[in-house]
Image (cartoon, rainbow, N blue to C red; front, side):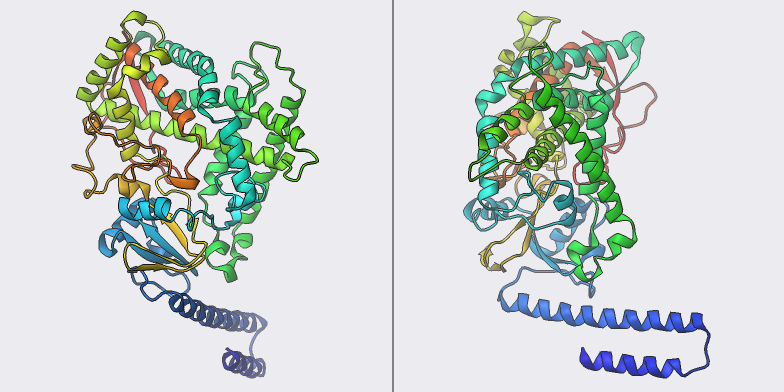
Length: 528
């Protein structure tokens, strides 16, 4: 490195003696500066690669990579698909270089079980990423918080006070009221054979449910909370999927300042922080005596816990409350929207599956003919749960589970060494379509789950839409209770068809960290 710098400076001194213009000198200076940067990066990358290799004798197989950027050029607009294609050539456990960051990609149920069950204690940490750190108050939420006392404490608190089975049951009335409101919206839009904007209605429905459970507010109010929440949710989802150069090539972190990424994140955070401050302040003033208020809404519970923790060793700050609200609202809402939208899309394509589900729902709820199907009707609906499982197998809400980081050197999948501080990414979407685990994996066949014990709650690693182990999403029961009730009523109360003259459904995903449907879903609903 020193010899390169010396030679460069000599060349620079010689160039300054030549009779050239100022612009030519500036161009030459820029070229020489780039030479120095590239030389330093290559030297540093070589040292890191040597140290990484020294820590592991049997690294996972890896595709060829470029200097500096590594395998970043092979990650397309839909990373879960790009990574599955690479895994087909290099194996279910492979090593990529995302810039200067080594990342082990897991694409099989057996390897996922090793990471999230057998050695869950080793892979329980999260890598530190710039955008989540900024948007989530230093990763003070549950999903991105690093492993340690704080994460264990807030997760235990959330499960006990917010997401326990008893708490989920307590919100039954809220779910049933909001499902009835959804049905009424569908009836209104479908009058006279009108086309129903399903994607939009399902999105509003999921936000309304979360608004009441998390914030204690109803969309019918005139305080404009839904517009504020829409802004918060969309900003977070888009930015959390944004590539930040400094996370993967530290010496080029300045690029994010030049290309506007840092400014965009800063503006978004200021807006999100202002929205959350308004929500927390409103909740603090609310008495909970009105018909649309709930003292047991998540925000009220969090504020109560904040007061109780004052003066104790483990104190919940206002920023902690706001970060947890982002998690609880964002993650639950997004999963509900995605599963309902894709389930309706798959059923519209498969008339046989739709008719079988409608028959089951209407038989189980015969006593409630043409009225709300309630949660007490759901236990008998086996095919309904099979449809939901099959939907999440094919359309995992988060195709790539949030990355983990090894806290010590270890070995997985027989002879694949994973050094300390290595990023590990589980491709849940690829596992759900793995022909080793599933027969006809690309086909929508809910029947495969009728006589199967396979579930999505972290015990069967061929189906892990919510993850598994310590880092599994704690809100799975709440989200699925909403999905089951909504889908049962949509199928029980209406006959569905694609609009006349419309081409075949677009089944592509939109780019991003979740698997939203790219094209909005529209359908014709005929009331039963």
